[in-house]
Image 1 (cartoon, rainbow, N blue to C red):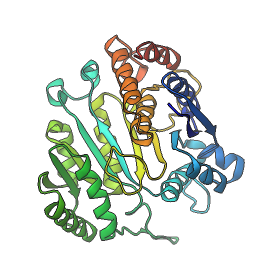
Image 2: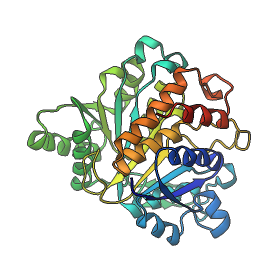
Image 3: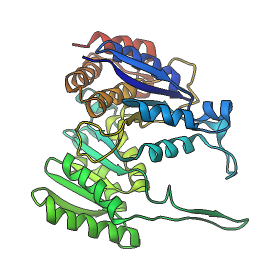
Image 4: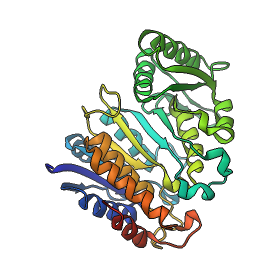
Length: 351
């Protein structure tokens, strides 16, 4: 296997603590070159901005970007003039053209009892959330006065069509398009565009439209009914975090952010970014208790979607599942195993 160049962004909080073992895991399955850069709050401290031009340029030249976590109370502010770590995420997504965020949700049998939902509700769940990543209210024009504030939510036909095409390409049997078409004009356009694309190109895939509040209820009452969910930026952000709890902990959910003209899995036309869904967990930073499994699974998505290495990706996923089946439980999963022990257990299960 040829050497692949990966930019690593450890970020803040537990980020560096879960990045180091992830690189150890990757080195156990292949040959890679790693190039580390400051990002998020750490970059604000050093350079006054969450994302420098130099870091963005390095990411663009890479084969893939691996991000751990950003943010923390140190940088929390309501002052719009001050930088926030999350601005680095938005800038990196925009700068790399990463419009499709993939978040697979598949509770493992070993963790059925760790979920706050009953086993009979989550058993057999295997869904994918496809979230539009570069449009909507997060990127719209923002205004602020002493007494009012506004965030503009805008979507174009082209933006909706390309994320819907990604979802249809990834679906096995059904796409659930989530919107708020009973209230929002952007959602009405969203529903029209998705419906038209389905009729033109993907009529062999079932399509259903569900309002976001109904989707939120169904995720915890009947998650097995979902195959692929596609939705806009803010709805996808919220729903995918909710779906993470089906797995027993948000510390178990990976994600991939992809750009270019593709249907996953495919050979990338631009570097993708891969990161766990969880945050920087500053309350446990430095304690050795961080769960590295979502980071490991994000590395598996990097191998599969970023580098086209399916065998290596499957080996990492099998190792995580094997370690959990053998009894591995981090504190967030009700156990006592720390980061170092969890890493050792997963590497021991690598085939």
